[in-house]
Image (cartoon, rainbow, N blue to C red; front, side, top):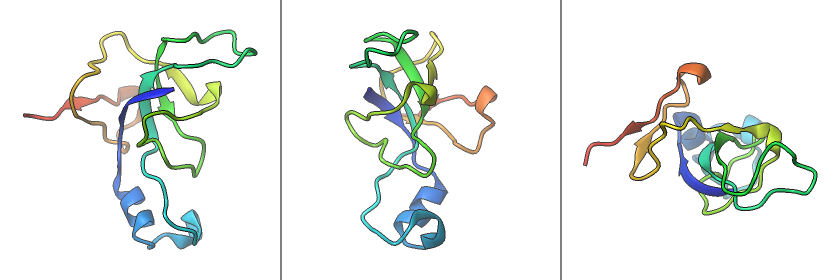
Length: 110
């Protein structure tokens, strides 16, 4: 998928600083970003409910970081359709600590 937005939270910053080696492992460097929003650039032949160009959001697989990239490969079960009212341009703040059903992305003031 082509990434339009991602987030970085305090846990990731601690992991990148080496303070969570029991969780993140001891190999560095680590990628950044777990939450992702964007559009599908390619879809596997066995995937029936998603199409190229669909706007989706979701998360990287468990304990996988690296959403802060131009493109990421994720399994369909990691994604949901993004709300139609999503605003895609400009920087965002998406707090991962918010409960998933009520999570909102807010535009950062210019």
